[in-house]
Image (cartoon, rainbow, N blue to C red; front, side):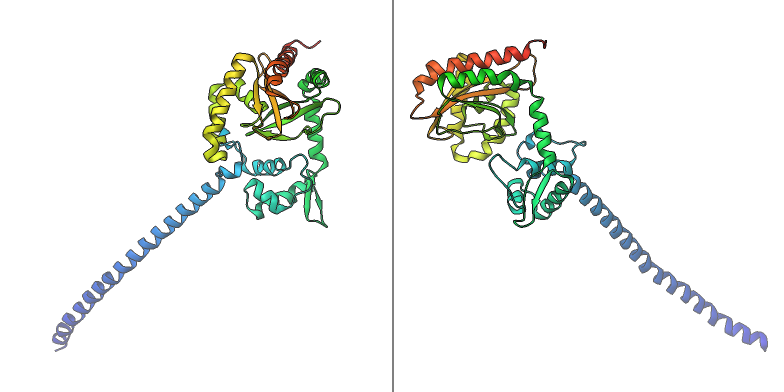
Length: 326
């Protein structure tokens, strides 16, 4: 009797156990799919974070400012570049600048500008006016500038030649070097009583539409000139074809006569002539210009008198820079 009870009960227990096992298996399958989905989501999020980190380390062309055509590379320090762009935004005769104007000039976000100006002020490269909320170049920046000028042999060599030229013809003489897509005046000399043109050292003028800039373009290699012109072209829009023709004419003039003429291209009231200073074996190319008010300086004078004199002065400076120091 007991055996019959055990046999009748046994079949009932086995299906129950089998059913439980099947239920467990079915329940486990959804859990496995959920786990795989979660793992996949975590992998996607990690990949997205890595992409964002790489993108944040990559400097934007606009944030590198003019001259971004020079490229960056793995060794490029974006934070340092941004700080230098802020310092470079200050121009001769500007006075103090606020964060809003600095952001406009550098094309950097205003919060970034605020952090940079705060840091540069703490280090002494900027001076802050709390009443006006503006900044000026600080003592440490001025020290760097004076040190750079003092160590430039070309200023020592060029100044007496430039001054003699300025006094002989009563004109404005300038010596400049490339600064991105502009020309930066390193030294200027003026004749007695000259009016209408005052460009102090530190002043920048456009490269593409000035005699001094086009003389520089004529002296550099075709590869470098092409790269610079590709960047300049974006600034002039529909005017570029006419400007490019003028540049090509100036390059031919420099090749044939040693100087180029600019009649009111940069400022309608100013005429000038430009010549390149290319020291033998030197990597840095400079340029000279000689000019004055249009009512005092005619095209005939520039082509037949001032131009040849400026080309001779440029050649003398170049030769002196290439001579051994005594």
